[in-house]
Length: 142
Image 1 (cartoon, rainbow, N blue to C red):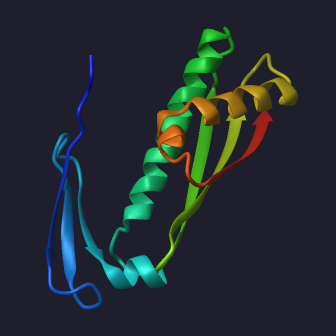
Image 2 (image 1 turned 180 degrees about the horizontal axis):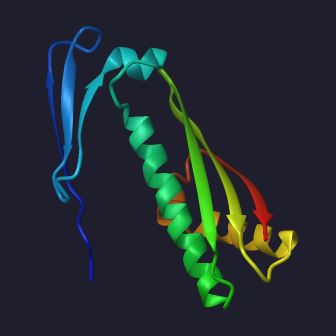
């Protein structure tokens, strides 16, 4: 069964001085202000497309890793995943850096690193981002 996710954005004005608003319409759980200054210079109170992409990547990777570890009979006690997406104005999205700190009883650090690397490669968002550099730092504690 295919699942469709939807968002809606309105924008007013030109790129440098304009602004907009994005809503997650499938779930209805979030609304965000957007603007070019936040996206191109960083900071500010508006959400950027790259911040939403980082949220998608970190959550997808966490789910993929949790699934693989569970299938192995070593479900994680906890996974803490960060994603940092780099955007360069005029060039586009350049990279996504994943960092995971995990508690997974019954696995060595080396075994965990292999599961994490496999999850990075298999995560659907990682696959959608195949045109950019994706890095992974994994740390496990038991």
